[in-house]
Amino acid sequence: MNRLRAMLRKEFAQMWRDRMLLGVMVVLPIVQLLLLGFAVRTEVKHLPTVVFDQCREEASRELLDTFVGTGYYEMTYVATSFAQVEDYIASGKAKVGIVFPPDFARRLDRHEPAQLQVIVDASDTMAASSAISTAQLVGQLKSQEILAERIGVGDAAALPYDIRIRPWYNPDFVSDYNLIPGIMGVVITMTLIMLTSMAIVREKEQGTLEQLLVTPLRPSELILGKIAPYIVVGYMQITVALLVGRWIFEIPFAGHVLTLYLLTLPFILASLGLGIGISTVAKNQMQAMQMSFFVLLPSVLLSGFMFPREAMPSFFYYLSTVIPMTHYLQIIRGIMLKGIGWSYLWQPTLFLLAFAAVMLTFSVQRFRRILTR
Image 1 (spheres, rainbow, N blue to C red):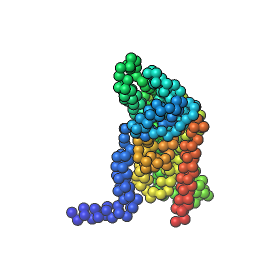
Image 2 (cartoon, rainbow, N blue to C red):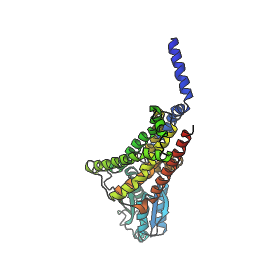
Image 3 (cartoon, helix red, strand yellow):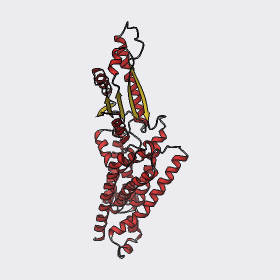
Image 4 (tube, rainbow, N blue to C red):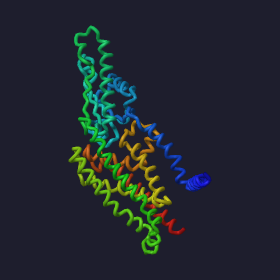
């Protein structure tokens, strides 16, 4: 019993001295609970919506108010042409587009079906399903209200609102079209961060770091030499993932492969920078592994891979903007499903480049401090 007590005392003392491990043990369950509690929501509300109202009369404004009143639509943008509606949806700024024709109010006055168009970005199947079902419900309820007011009118059997749904990019709502591109990003993130997070700390534990220190290599050159092979690994993974997605899951590829390869490089650099930064902070491989999982959990839950970001509270929505995976999902889904290019994807690409530059600079500076100890 005394031996067991001594062993327990030693383990608790060692755990208390390792503040990094203690922080991960205490903070990680709390973070997991918060993320799962707030991010895991299947009911998507406040979808950013672009409106092109060619009618501009009370009838169209009243129906728009009904859409907003459901809580599922947020009238974020106002377009002056159909081309602007296309641009907002293609860029991902808007998930829904509502287009009123010029004769919308006149057809209502003549007791004829008044058509309007609801365009839904179906590359995100969960958000698109929510938008479409709500639009259909709004049309039915408003039609019933008007029909009730037209009792006794001869053509009252015709529905006043004729809402026609046009799902873009994934009209059949195939969930694989949304998930497989996201899985590609998850695979790259998990592999590169976990491998590079143990690069330098492994050298410490094996005693080979001292051999590297006596070489004329500068810290920046050493860091670059550590991550360069993993760039090749990242491209091999994305190539295999594209082939599997195309041949097995029959995922469409609407864009250009070269564009995807070029815009994947900033994401690979960002992931490697994050991994090598962890490696310079961690004291051993176990710490590096734990910190890697601590980073990977928000990447999966908050990036929009599993759950739409629009369904998250504001704090978690804006928190997700600092996660590289969030921006890469815009790139890979935009290229594969929408066929868009640099003109729409320059913002997430620049963020990834900036993130990679910051993390690699931090890693070099951190490694220099290690050398001076």
